[in-house]
Amino acid sequence: MQQIFIEGLEVPTLIGVYDWERTQNTVLIVDLLIDADLSAAMQSDDVAHTIDYAAVAETVKQVGSDSSFELLEAFANAIIRAVCQAFEVQKLVLTIEKPGILPDARKVGIRITHEAGK
Ligand SMILES: Nc1nc2c(c(=O)[nH]1)N=C([C@H](O)[C@@H](O)CO)CN2
Image 1 (cartoon, helix red, strand yellow):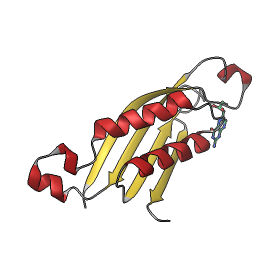
Image 2 (cartoon, helix red, strand yellow; image 1 turned 180 degrees about the horizontal axis):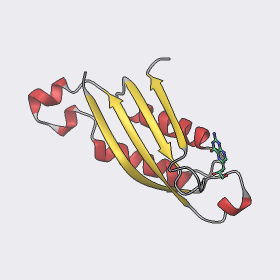
Image 3 (cartoon, helix red, strand yellow; image 1 turned 90 degrees about the vertical axis):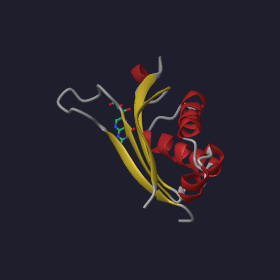
Image 4 (tube, protein in one colour; image 1 turned 180 degrees about the vertical axis):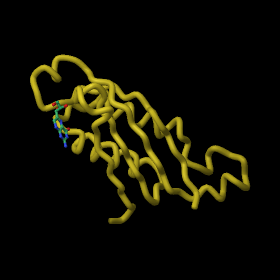
């Protein structure tokens, strides 16, 4: 199995169900685990033959700055669509954490597994 990952990406975006959340951006924490074919880059040592994780991070941040969803679920859908359109992804596990929301919970968020062609 070959994977690329990004952990703890800080993504500012306007998000939330309630009025108090919609007056300023929230910084979400995004993790991506991408199954992809890395074998060409393993041979060539050329970033053009793989998924550039910096470009993936930039794509995710762009979705954050372009969107204003209420729910994390809808934001996740936009990220999945953007990443799968731009990169040769076989499978993507996307985790989005929204910090500081529940006083008695360390973290809240969602995790979605998306497989290409499904
Ligand atoms: N499954 C979800 N539940 C909730 C979400 C969400 O995006 N997905 N959002 C909220 C509010 O916006 C929260 O941030 C403040 O209470 C509540 N539940």
